[in-house]
Amino acid sequence: MQSHLLSVIYLIGSVSFIIGMKMMGNAKTARKGNLVGAAGMGLAIVGTIVLFKGDVSPVIYGLILLAILIGTIIGWMTAKKVQMTKMPELVSIFNGMGGACAALISLIEFNHIKHTDHIIETVQNLIPVEPTSAGALFCMLAGLVIGSVSFSGSIIAFLKLNGTLDKPVRLPKYNIINTIFLIAVFAFSVYLFNVETPILIYVLFAMALLYGVMFVLPIGGADMPVVISLLNSFTGVAAAFGGFLYGNYVMLTGGILVGSAGTLLTVIMCEAMNRPLFNVIFGAFGGGAATSAIGDATKGTIKDISVSDTATLMNYSKRVVIVPGYGLAVAQAQHVIHELEIILEERGVEVKYAIHPVAGRMPGHMNVLLAESNVDYGKLVEMDDINPEFPNTDVVLVVGANDVVNPAAKTDPSSPIYGMPILDVENSKNIIINKRSMNAGYAGIDNLLFYNPKTSMLFGDAKKVLTELVAELKTM
Image (cartoon, rainbow, N blue to C red; front, side):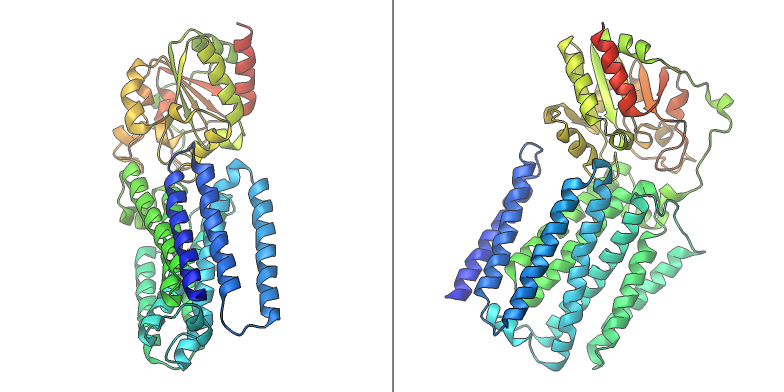
């Protein structure tokens, strides 16, 4: 009876994951979708603890509840306090924890599978499945390798995103070295099928961790949104192998959903950059030597604009498009820019936001940022839909974005970002770019848009400048 009830609970949990993920596809229902998925996971955890049929001492139950309590407190406080600019780092580190869990499961169960024909009896009591030793061993090794790569790779991604590792590190012939090391990891995994030395699993664990570091370390900053998505899919796949291992349906469903969603998002990111995944992993355009502003005279001149002139230009426009970027998040100016939007619309100006798929530091970063300030989701227009509207746009205000509006992606074959689809802001009538300085963007390359005759540079911190711009508009 208990096993049937647990199966029903797992079914409810699995359905909640699917419904929650569907709801998270729309900004208006994303928050509720997150809660639905969390509720399903909570139900599955409680059901597993309460309906477990094995002989477990009260001490073990106490340790489990203590671990849940500690994890809940840390996760809750971290999520509540994290700034929007640090959200990509938070996603990366949380994703890494999922990979670490999958790897630890494999480490713990490896000894059991080497000394018994089936998974430990307590697991059989929970879910009455009897996988073969070979099948269970395959799930363990796959979960160990993939989870470990996801964990160590996510740690490196976290360090890159927070600026600790702001430069890619490349050994000579690093592509060849990484490929050979990956083959060695696979070969050693196959070898472990036929040995009776459990200590060797820790050697494989160390090798997989090292490969995760080697895998992410050379990849440049501009490719990090793709890498985060790819590592997310790794964690999902590793969790799915854990689900196979234990015959745990909710774990299997969750892993498959995360793995497939992460893979699909990775493909979408690559298409948005017009770069095959192979080139992202082995090309790393974000890490090349940054092109400087040397030779500005041949590119054109930089033209400044004041806050007052910007306000006047926008006040008498019919259509304004705002292009948000990471600089907007750094300045925490999302609420001010929403106020700017409201003021302009009250004066009959049509305002939209142009969203590039890889703007920010992770997929959907700008959507989440603007949703936090209650921007109407209908005003967020994707790149393919907004590009035809730029020729009829009076003013484009670029706030903190750089690489996603760089015309070099279309005009300069020697540019590292050549071929990447961009927002065609250069086709608008007036371009205003708000930046702190003339420094290069995340990809480390100069932006030719700065020298466009229609471009005016509005230098300064985004929040300060936008606050002044709002105040100036209110006086008109």
